[in-house]
Amino acid sequence: MALSFKKALVTGGAGFIGSHLTEALAAAGCRVTVLDNLSSGSLANLGAVADAIDFRQGDICDPEAVEEAMRGCEAVFHLAAVVSVPQTVENPVASARVNDLGTVQIFEAARQNGVGSIVFASSSAVYGDDPQLPKTEDLPPRPLSPYAVQKISGEYYARVYFQLYGIHTVSLRFFNVFGPRQDPSSPYSGVISIFMTRAVAGRPATIYGDGSQSRDFVFVSDVVRANLLAAASPAAAGEAINVGSGRSIDIKRLWQQVCRLDARQTPAQYTDPRPGDIHASVADIGKSQAMLGFSPEISFENGLQQTFEWYQRSRQEQTR
Ligand code: NAD
Ligand code: UD2
Image 1: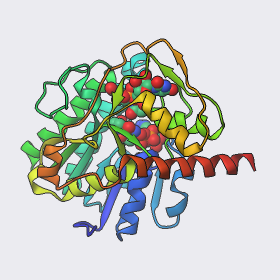
Image 2: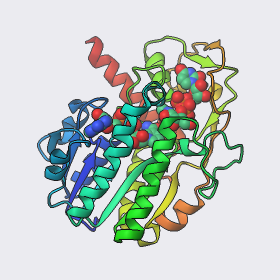
Image 3: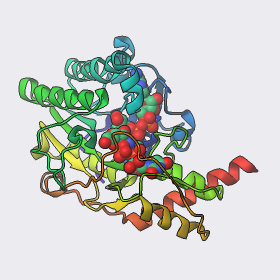
Image 4: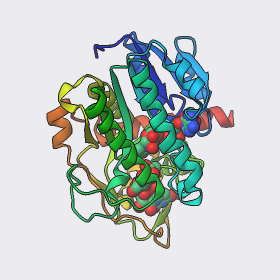
């Protein structure tokens, strides 16, 4: 994709989604600075582009680190965040420092440095337990965690920075993103990363409840493309836009599909439903099609295959 800017900052660029975005920007000829404190990301995620980018280990709450990282950038992709919902529930103040204050700091430094566009990583969590399906962007937010409150607040700042200062800002509400490099290490990691890790080890998955709960899984390369389109779509300025596949799959079927890739039919173990689990989630992708010209390109099956192959290779490397 041809880019309208030559230099960009990716906050959280050593993380799962940020590292894929950084690779795509570098491949398109953009000079990329990554600002990441490595709290949940890792340098290994940037292994393929280590020599091509300017990596800075630092905190988005540190004004000096932000100022230096932002210098000369024309676009900012703000992905750094405390991403664990339970962590924000456990420690609302510490997470607000990063997700609220850190976010304003990024917007303000962008303004001071004359940055033209900012794309903010928001989440489908802002919809909470609203029963309407599919989720449309005009639904009133129903946050159920500090994490969701912080994402909504980031969206409002994005809109205000467009309205007050004319900066091209877009908030993207990612649904359940999956793909290579997603960290499976916590019980609250993305379900696909956990299921993949179990499958390649020949171990059963744990399914919470009866497995009829469903999610909209979107492949990471499609999320990257949505970010690039958002930075370049004038109609999207000041808007919050869903980034999903527009399809949902239930968790029981997800495990069956993962097992099919593994050619082993390991039965899942069922346990109590997860407290507060949302039953169904699927994005309406009409606004992203209309405003960004975005439609997902990678089918769920293709994305699952690519993801499986990556977890298989990782396991082989670990056990070698
Ligand atoms: P991730 O944990 O892999 O990436 C987050 C990155 O931010 C990490 O590299 C981490 O080290 C860095 N970071 C955290 N706090 C920081 C700080 N104070 N200063 C500098 N860097 C810091 O998570 P991800 O899944 O790649 O998520 C990226 C963004 O997308 C996040 O904002 C997340 O809330 C959002 N999101 C992700 C999903 C998903 O399904 N993965 C869904 C909705 C929204
Ligand atoms: C997603 C986000 C979370 C928050 C939330 C808001 C991810 C990884 N998490 O949580 O940050 O934004 O949306 O709604 O994007 N499951 C199992 N077995 C497992 C793991 C999960 O059955 O080992 C189920 C789980 O109960 C849930 C579904 O799989 O019904 C998806 O779980 P998840 O943690 O991947 O994502 P979600 O949508 O609950």
